[in-house]
Amino acid sequence: MEGPGERGNPQDKMTAKIIRVLIAKPGLDGHDRGAKVIARALRDAGMEVIYTGLRQTPEMIVEAALQEDVDVIGLSILSGAHGSLVPRVMRLLREKGMEATRVFVGGIIPPADVQGLKAEGVAEVFGPGTSTSEVVVAIRSALGQGQDG
Amino acid sequence: MPTLTERVAVGDRRALARLISRIEREDPESPEILAQLHALTGRASVVGVTGAPGTGKSTLVNALARVFRKGIPGGGAQTVGILALDPSSPFTGGAILGDRIRMRDLAGDEGVFIRSMASRGFLGGLSRWTDSAVRAMDAAGFEIILIETVGVGQDEVDIARQAHTVVVVETPGLGDDIQALKAGVLEIADVLAVNKADLPGADSIAGSLQAMLGLSGKAEADWQPPIIQTVATTGRGVEELAAAIDRHRDHLQRSGEGQRRERERVKRDLEERLRGRLFDEWRAAEGSSLEEAARKVTARECSPEEALRQLLGGDSRPGRTG
Image (cartoon, rainbow over all chains, first blue to last red; front, side, top):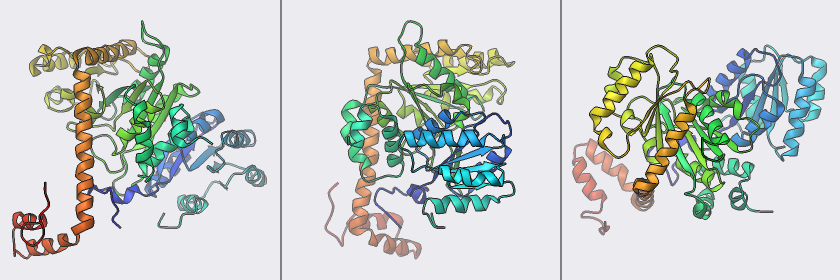
């Protein structure tokens, strides 16, 4: 498809809506290999991934999401502190009128806690062993995008 | 409910973030919004920070932002907008934007706004929308705008057209002195930073750069790019670097060079827009003849030069002026 404004640059297909994702690690655990694997998989699926590094507070995460105008926040939590961190993130998003931002949680989350997180408004919770393609599909469908994104 | 334009004009951070997204996705409303904001622009000082990958650009931008927030010696605190560029994958269009990792010191400061931008296929260290994003930040009231380019090599020098002041970051241990002899990045430097100056070889790099500047004739000009050794991780030399950037801004104002650069930038920008627009108009009107012309040239029925004459309305078509 050719639209006005294209100047024969190689990124013609890139001007469409590109999904922007913030990958954040709230709390104190220091392992971010999983977060990095996800970041890479999302990049390979054509998304722009803002990676913010370790030990982010909920305030830092929500402010970064606001400045970066992301569609999705992915929280990687291995510390067991999801019960306090996730509700704080969700509350801050509501306070700033950012309810449209979809939040996904990945990491070690006991099955019993999953319903609670979803009740807070989390779109999906991914445990160990989730394939990266499942994550990509879940993000796309949460944003109402089919496979041709 | 105020409009997006009104919200950006009063510095609403969320509105600014939204506007930059609209600019990037070429939303049909964004040119109108930028046009309305134009009168508010031209106040910010735009500083480009460029250099090879691994020279510590993000950490240096973080450290510079902290100094500007405090105020350089003898000046007041200034608000800082940061545009941090990273490359998009040419294969998938995706990108990992990791510059914020090095900028966590700035979190929680309302006087700082950081936006990561993917290059989206644009070569030259920036993205096609960087200029518009700078205008949006300028209109929102940020006084210093730091643009961190994609880690560039030797000839990606677009930043020289976008920024008032270009800081080129070098570092010890990245190749031999001959790298400094190559044209390009060094020639666009208004200020040179030798970062990671606690590593061995910093003095030698600084010396080579000094010699190069002497040979390039820049030393006789009315602005001599200062060479400043920094250690961004500890803050060493960063106040000096910020002061040098500030001196360069003064120089631009006093000498009229700033006005000249600004006019040159606007002229190029208008030229580019004109080229795009004229081509789009032509394509809308007569683009179908392109296919036929390509067929003729590949079949050797006519030369590309001949085809161009015909496309521009030589014989068969009423001629276009210009």
